Length: 185
Image (cartoon, rainbow, N blue to C red; front, top):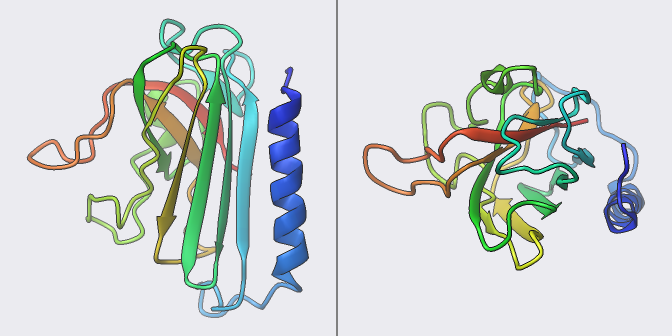
């Protein structure tokens, strides 16, 4: 798997910064994250059919060579998530969300959207990272949520969808077919 230098640099810088700020981890109490504990998750890779950690489900919307990097830092009462993609179709809108399970051979293996408040479908409970690619198929997105991840209930993947997220009405939270998936570590 080829990971471009800018993605490696982004992951290295994020990991270094998180490590410099996190301090020693606090003990887990009652299956909840302690207030001063930082949780870091990330994933990066070139989407393929062979890598279970970076899977392409739709080669028309995630062509050969398409790749992404996602970083999540949760601490101090909030969760910050950043997504960088390249090699997708140029000038196109995509949806992207955190999902409950790791990527699998089938698009639905990643489970439903991760929800901090179960049953609540909105950008405050879920992590929505919709983006529009530039003329070269690159894009980026970030989200900040005013809650912390719980170690007993961490998201398992980031899924890129074929459409932007519907923000209201009976189809709120839907974003079309699953195009590609990154398993979080």
